[in-house]
Amino acid sequence: MGLTDAPEPMSDAELRELLAARALDASVPSEDLQIDAFVARDSDAAAELARLSTAAAWIGATEALTPPPRLRASVLAAARARNRAPGALPDDLMRIYRRETDEFDAFVATLGSDDLAATTANGLSARDLIIHLAAMESMVADAVGRPVIELDAGTDVGGRTAAFVEVFGVQPIDAVLTVWRDAVAGVTEWAATGAPRGLLPWLGVEVGRDTLLVSRTFETWIHANDIRRAIGRPLEHPPAAQLHRMADFSMRNLPAWLDVVGRGHPGRTARVVLTGPGGGTWLVPLAADGSTAVEEADVAIELDVIDWCHRVGERVAPDAVSVRVTGDAGLARDILEAASALATL
Amino acid sequence: MPTVAWERGTRERLIARDDAALGECYDQYASFVYGLVLRVVRDPKAAEDITQDVFLGLWEKPACFDPAKGALRTWLGTLAHRRAVDHVRREEARRRRDQTAHNRVVTTPDVEEMALALMTAERVREALELLPPEQREAIQLAYFDGRTYREVAVIMGIPEGTAKSRLRLALRRVAMTLEEEDLRQWA
Image (cartoon, rainbow over all chains, first blue to last red; front, side, top):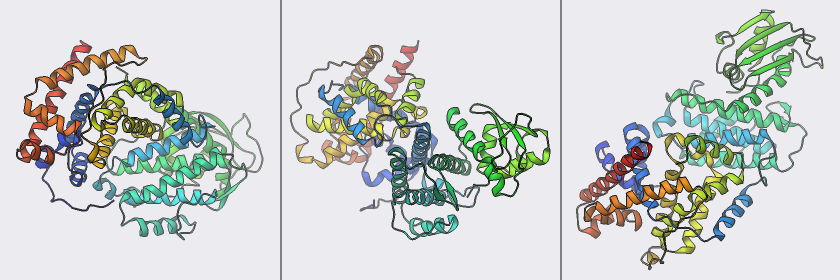
């Protein structure tokens, strides 16, 4: 994408006069970038464009005409052919991965250049955080045998992100989004078409297909909210069923995470109650040594499911979480510490 | 009219790759999309191809449609019109072909929604007919002939600023008609 005839910068007043033309697709293509950037930063302009676009669509509706009957079957056949997994996606993990990545794609499309330059909580600009996601997603694509980019960027999270930023930091955001989309498509295809149930190397540990899908869903959601936070937009959360699946994933992995951070407690059990839509109750053994959870838990902790997920993503410190503890407070602290064992950025 | 709740539910089903949801969207909006595209491109085969692309666009990127920001009709209409105009601009030589005769019969399964849509479209048609002729011509050139506002200015022999303001006044008049119509329907 490139402008062949870069137009003169226009004032907001001039841009406002072009909103009707934009709604009618009658603006000049070389001016569209300026108009779209104006709309992205001016909420009144965005509302006016939405109003005029609705009017334009209704002008189109005055021409409604039944298409040839064969077209319906043709559209549905083409849709099925494009669906890499015939019919519905085969399991809920693929659906939540698909949903979250689709949401992210749509969200990024709403970001203007000022938004992309905003600094997120982890120090990266929004643009670089998107590049980081592409670096990670393409690493997954590599791991599952569907490489999408020839770039010797390694598998160290920081090093790989830096290498991607060096290449894509100076290019239009669409360039790295193409890599990210290709990687998402590759992972989806792998997961949908008989992905092996064996373990894959990921960030220094061996993980299964389901763990990989949920952790990618998790990271995509967390980073989208990082950007929303940086540009002052309200945070958005997945539907309750998806939150529950993600919380369940974290509970299944919590024993291993406790061991990873050196806080495992063999033979002891926690009852974790996550409140709010998508929450639930889990009995969790506090070490991955094969011991099972028992009804007589040594500690019970209760907190909001969103707070827990933010803790897993390390978006809140252990002592900043509002949590009710009954029983051994030391165990509760270790659980909250271990929750973010796999958080990367 | 389809509710926001219906649109949200349909969006989630599309994201979950439920092709029955795509079929429902097609039944609801195919006449709108196809009629609009055919009016712009004036080529039934191209109109079918673009209509198919529009629904496949919804199928492949359902999350790009945000019910909080506008109705699915507007989203599909914007996508359809943009693709139709792109086609026209690429196929300049074919742009002036005779329009195929077409009736205005619309059949879809959601009778209530389409009845309301037909009534609204009729109000919009009346609003267009009530526009000053120079505004109506500007809309015709820009929206249905795929002309830019600069080309509209040249064709009509007016300054660019006048072309912009004619388009703006005309479109605002239609928007006001819709807002009045919306109020009437909910009264």
